[in-house]
Length: 365
Image (cartoon, rainbow, N blue to C red):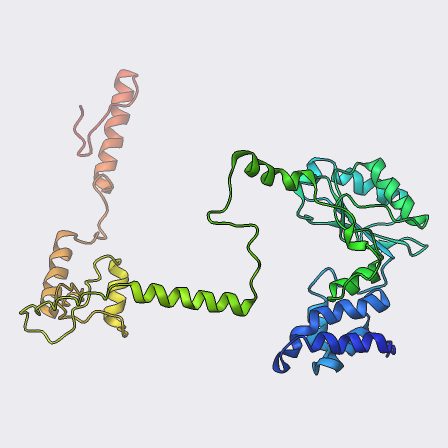
């Protein structure tokens, strides 16, 4: 296992101390950022280190490390360039920006350039649709980028420069960013004083100022209270409201209906389907209305017919539908067929005409 520096181990102890003793596993997320800050990714050694200091097994740590995309599972460049290719940015040209960078750098998604400087990835929404298309470098925003502007940023990074993001503090490497994500301040002089909010972000605030809209009772000069002071004030306000509230009048007792039933007054389940009501009757539970509850209509299965009634019905059906016999249908008798044939031949020989039409009984028509 890679031996992590003593500084990393000291920071790990500081992270764990932020949480209650019986909740130390809550420190896993910042600890994963911490090991990534030393190696540039969460290596098997980093997983083992987190498991060791938290008393977990490696499978538990690995399950978390593989779930979040911010934890990299293979060596990553100094600068992670993420281009949004989701719907809004894509419509505005995000895919063109990504394709241009991929072709120029000679890498694809989640691949790193040969000099180890840049890792390129396409991102699913960077939550800045009003600035699209956007790209981030180590999670700092470059807004309204176009292919040429994006190329200028990556070339400056490869040359050793650190271009200024559109919003936010000055750029730092991925390892330096991981330290901040672990919960430690950026120690560079004046680093957090750089940058500022974007114009689109301030639009709502300026509209509120223009139209005089503010939160009711808001005083910008009011100091922010500590959590203990806020909890105390909330408890006092709640107690005061409870004291001022008039005591509720007792509800009148309704006389029980004279139904003669000892069952509780349960709401009739008429709003249920017949199938549900029938099922509840056959398989009742604690919430099923009892059969003799006031106003309850409980379905019951119909009484099966008596055996003799069924026999009478069957006999009537047989009488009304006699079965077919084995006798031949009319017209199939041999004698009638022979007579018809002789009469037809006789008529044809005497008149030279076609055979006469005869009935089934041999009578000419």
